[in-house]
Length: 81
Image (cartoon, rainbow, N blue to C red):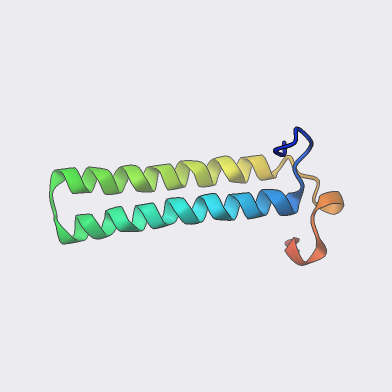
């Protein structure tokens, strides 16, 4: 659902999903850089947890995308053929 309580459009969903995944991806890459630079069990754990959050959210968004009606709410330029 959208912020106003209505049904979220596919375009809005895609914009929100891309923003969320970008933020999580940057966090995971930063944690991985720290791990690669300072190889310790703690930095390894931070990197693994960050990537786990990214993967979990990617899967959740992929599942949520199946509830969208692409024919009705997705602009043609955003549709996958």
